[in-house]
Length: 375
Image 1 (cartoon, rainbow, N blue to C red):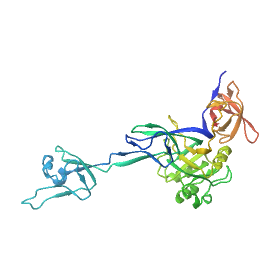
Image 2: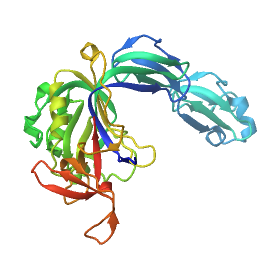
Image 3: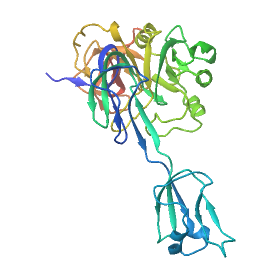
Image 4: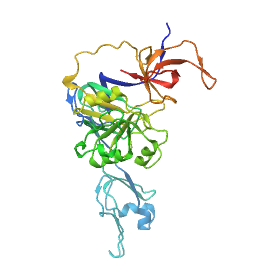
C-alpha cells in the first residue's frame, strides 16, 4: 500500500541525540571515550595561523631590493614587538642612519631579496571547541574532535539567529499565546534561556540582551523587528554567525503567531533545567534548523517506546501545522487523505488532505502546504 510523506519539525520530550564537535584544522582532543562532559567544557583546541603583515623594506629604506638583506636587524624566525627595529642602514661614517621600527607584533616569516619585502606573521589565534551539550563522549576522532551523546528533550524551530549558547530555562510568559514584551524580561534572567509565548518584540530581545540572557525562544517575530534587531535585511543565507550577543529562535514563523501549545508546555515543564541552544538556520540544500536541546540526565526514561509512525509519514491522526494562507500557523489533526488530486481555487490540481482545526472547522488544504509536528 502506498504511503505519503511530508517534512516536519521534531518536538519530543525524549530522544537519543548525538552531536559532532569538530575543529576547523587538526589540533588536540582533550577528552576520551566514556568521559562525561558539561556543555561549557572544552573538548578540543587548536591554533589558527596568525594574520600576515607585509612590510616593504625596499621602499621604506629607499634602496634596491637586493641590498635590503645587508640592513636587516632580525632574521627569519625571530620574534618582533611593536616598535622594535627590524632594519637599519649603515649611514654615512656611522651617522645619519635610517631605522625601520616594526608596526606589528609577531614572528618574521620570510624576507625576500627579490622584492625587498618582509612578512611578519601575527600571533596564533586560539580556537576552542566546547561540548555544547552535557552528555557522554561516545567517539573520539584523533586530532579532529569527538561525538557526544545524551538522552534529551528536543525542539526544532522554524528560524533563528545567533550561534551556540546554553543556560537555564526560564519561562517569561504564562501562556503560549502571550506576546513576549520587554516587561516580561527581568534581571533574574541573566544567562538564562528565556521562553516566550506568541510573538516576541524587538524591545523584548533588546532588554534580554542588555541583561545578559543567553537566548530567547518564542512563537514568532515580525520581519520589521528582525531587521531592527540585526540592523540590516537578512537575505537567503545561513544564519548563526551574527554578533548579537544573544541567540533568538522562533518556533512557528513570522508575525502574530503563538507557540504550539505542546511545545510551550514541554519547555515550561523543563524550567530550571540546563538547555543548549543553537540559532543556526539554513533553508537550502543541507537544511539546518535552529534547536533547543535539554539533556535529561538521570531523569531520562530507561527505554523509549517505538513510534507507531515512520519519520515523515503522513497518516490520519497526526498533528500538522499549516504553512500557507489562509490557515497559516494553525495546527490541526489529519482526518482524511483523498487519493485523487483535487481542483484548487486557483484552478490547478494538487493532492490534498483534510484537517480538523482546533475551532472544530474542517479544512481541505494541499499536502505541500503543511508540515508534520514530529514526536
